[in-house]
Image (cartoon, one colour):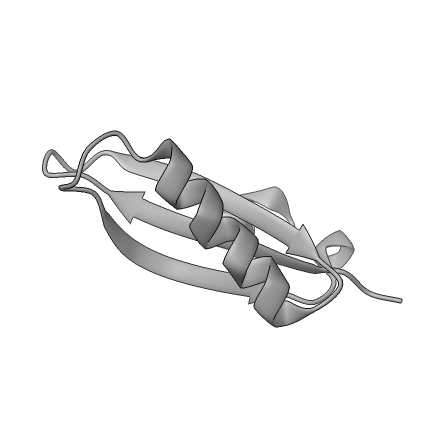
Length: 67
């Protein structure tokens, strides 16, 4: 059984990046968790989502590739 792992990359006005993640048994739930973590953790309203990537087998992906 594979678990889905989603990374969400956000940027602020100064070009700084923040990373949020979510992991669940379904792709949609994984994305929902990552977006929820972004909503909780964003510093101000100027942060914008740059990318959302979902992996279905995180064990085969290097952490460097996730960034």
